[in-house]
Length: 138
Image 1 (cartoon, rainbow, N blue to C red):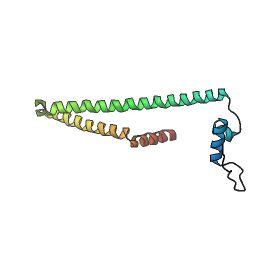
Image 2: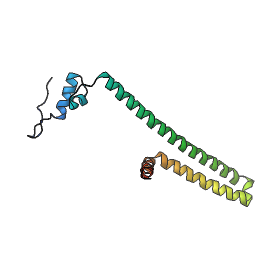
Image 3: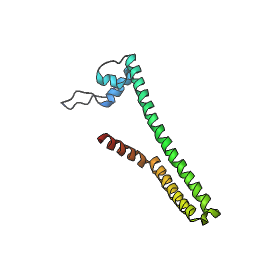
Image 4: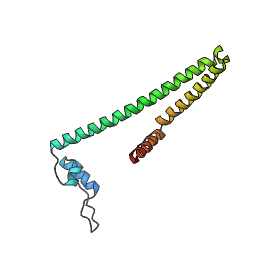
C-alpha cells in the first residue's frame, strides 16, 4: 500500500489527514485511536455505544413530545375549523352569538394551523433553540 509523503511545515511533525486515513485503513483501527495514540478496548466501544444510544433515546423523547404538541395544536385547529364551518353553513349563522363564535373559531383555526406550519418548518427549530436559550438564562 502506498502512503503519501507526510505534511511537514517545520513546526509540526503530524502527518497529513490522508496519511492518517491510510494508516487507519491499513492497520484496521479507528482514526481516533491513531490521533489519541492509544488503543481503545472493547469495553470503551461498548460504553461509547451505550452513551450514544442513551443520547439518541433522550433526543427522541423530546422530539416525540414536541410532535405530540404540534399534532394536538393542529387537531384543535381542525376542530375549530369544523365548528366554524358547521355554524356558517347552516341556519345557525343567523344567531348573532353563534355567528361571533363561528368567526372566533375560524380565526383560531387559521392561527393554529399557521402555528403548526411554522413549528414544523425549519423556523420551528430556531424558535425551539431560542426558547431553550431564554429558559437557561432564567
